[in-house]
Structure formats: C-alpha cells, structure tokens
Image (tube, rainbow, N blue to C red; front, top):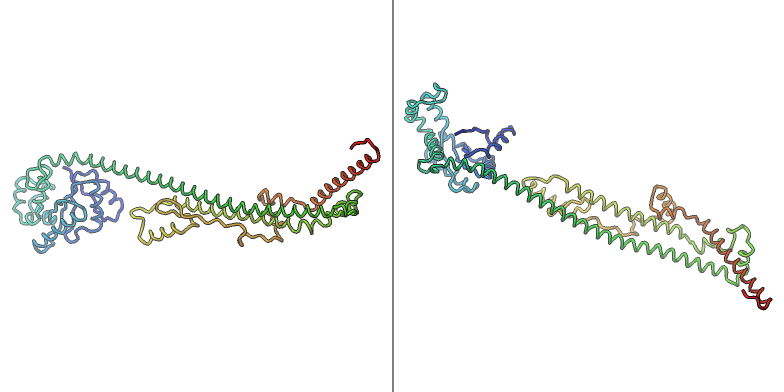
Amino acid sequence: MNIVDTPGTNVIVERQQRLTEEFVPRADMVLFVLSADRPLTESELTFLRYIRQWRKKVVFVVNKVDLLESEDDVEQLLAFVSDNARRLLSLDAPSVLPVSSRAALRAKLECGSAVHSGAMDSLADDLLQDHPAWRASRFGEFERFIYDFLIGGGAGAGGVGEGLRLKLQTPLFVADALAAAAGRQIAAEVASAEGEVAALSAVRAQLDRFTADMEKDGAAQRAAVRELVAAVVARADKFVDRTLQISNVGAAGSYIFGGAGGASGLPVAKGFDGEVVQGAADQMAGLVAEHAAWLASNCEAQGDYYTGYLAARRRPQRRRGGGSGGERQRAAGEGAGGGESGESGESGTPSPPPRTVSGGGEALAVAVGGAMGAAQAAAAAGGSASLQAIADFNLAAAKVLLEEEIREHCAWLDALNARDACGASMPGTRL
C-alpha cells in the first residue's frame, strides 16, 4: 500500500493545488484530513465536491482532537462533520475518524521509532500499545480501520476483497468520468453549433426584412424620379407644340431659314430653361444624391451592427455561472435592447438590428441649390453610376441637340409641302 501526502486544498502556490487535483483520479481511496478547530472550510468543501466527481471512497480524518476539552466535544464534532458530509456531499454513510497526530508521534518516538528510522520491532510495538499518549491519540483505531477496510476481517470493515474492488474500480471510474466529460463536451459543441445555425437563420431573416424594407423605400424614391422626368417631358412637349404651331409663322421660319445667334438663338432654346427645365436638373441631382446617401447610411448601419454582433459572439464566455447576478442582468439588458451593438442573447439569436431610415428624412435631405455640385463631387470621388450620369449632363448641349432635331423636322415638313405643291400643278404626278 502506497500513501501519498499531497498538498492542502487552500495553498498559495497554484502548482501545488493543481498537483493535488491531478493525483486524485489515480488514488484508490482518499484520506481527507480535517482540523478539529476549523472543520469543513469552504475550500475543503469545494475540493471534496471535485473528489466526488471521480466517485472516490473518502474517509474523513479529524486531526487535533487533543485540543478539545471533553469527549462530548469530540462526539459533537464528529456528528457535525458526518451530518454536513451527508447534506452537502450526498454521502450515505460517511466514515469519520478522530485522531491526534501529535500524541501518536510522541508515543512512537518514545517507544523506539526514532532509533530504527521509523520502523518498530515487535517489542516496541507492544510498548506502543500500552503507551498513554498512543491510546489518547486514537491512532490505533484509525490504523485498524484502514487495515480492516482494505484487507477485511474487522467489524464495520468493507469485507474481504475491498482493496481489490477499489483497485479495480479506479480505472473503471476514471474511464467513466472521462467518457462523461467527453459527452458533456460533445453536447456543448453540438449546442454551440445549433446556436450558430439558429443565429445564422435569424440573421438571414433579418437581412430578408432589411432587403424588403429597402426595396419598398427604394421603389418610392425611384417613382419620385420617374414623376420628375415625366413632368419635364410633358412640359417639353407642350412647349415645343406651342412654339411651333402653324399660327407661329415666325418661329417656324426661324428653323427653316435659320435664326440669328445659331441654335442657341432659336425660339425653343430661348425659353427652354424657364418653361421646361425649371430647375429639374438640380432636383434630379438632389433626388439621386439623397437616394445614394440613404442607401449608404442604411447599409453602413447594418454592416456596423453585424460586425458588432460577430465580435460579441467571438468573446470567450464566462465560466462557472457567468459572473455575478448584476453582470448577468447587465449582459441581458445589452442583449435585449442594444440594437446598435449586435449583442446576442442566451439563445444565440441577435438582438433587433437598427431600423431602416426611410428616404426623404431630415438627416438625408440634400439642398436643391447645391445638389448638382454634390453630385459632381460624389462622382469625382467614385460614386454611383447615376450620380456620374447626372454630373456629366450638359444642359446647353441638350438644348443645341433639341434645336437641331426640331430644325431637321421642320426642314422635312418644308420639303414635303414643296413636293405636294409640285404634284398639284402637274396632273398625273404622284408623291
């Protein structure tokens, strides 16, 4: 039988505590030494719970009973340890033995143990059994209990073969504990994977709602742009029809025979800005710039939210209860209402993302007067294709192009009228 004296449970050096914890699985039986003046401290209870995880046989040895004044005090102390072992550690019949190691050591030294380097011959052993300090130490009962329990043969002992049973149980219990630990780890990993899948599904649902909101608001903004373009086209049609009506012979003649100042001096070009455009270019630039700012703001907010959500999920989780109650309440509050940070709740699902800001809000409004300049600046900085198209739009060139189209149309009408007149003067001629 090998007896290993491990460090205590409340040592300062962490390595010693770890050494004790690592040796427990290798032990067949644990002799847990308590002090009569401070039995079952908090650190001892914590370590005893750790021992119980390995299903080890524990024998409680209460030392320093020589400090107690009476036998009643000893019995009360043994009852206290036994009751708490049942209640706190779920032990059915805990073995609690009182000893005085100091008295036992003094008796052995006086009976010749020091002369033979700790060993005692039969004569010294006989003297030891009659020594008053040895009888007072109760160490003889303790040694007989251990011997009878492991070898068998005494009252209250575990019976013959108890030592063999403990020896065989040790690797079985260790294997069982390792299998249980592996099962818990696998279950935790499965739960973590399920949480990741649930979080991914929640993120996907949130992105679907975000896409639907953006498409709805974007459709309304595009409709506003189409209405603006349609209004400009309608004004242009009315203006051209009114300018080139048959009764306006002077305007028609200007397109057929040419006008002073080239294309820019023709009737349509003169009134195009005031009656057709009416600031539509700046309005268009404002709408597109507002749309671009709205799109960038909402997408950036969503990106920041999910970046924070991923960062929160990657943080190491608190172990052993996850901190104090106040910390858990604060964490729960952040997970429930912290839409900007992307904190997740206990289920792993993200908290609600930031709400989509509708277009046309004050935060995204663009002043119409400087919209064209804003569009040009955004296009120069690598903005959207729509802003680039607006920035490249040249109103003067558009007016010249329109005048050329009208001139060609008027020239075609003049040629058609001339051929009709010729056909009328020459019978049989068909156009």
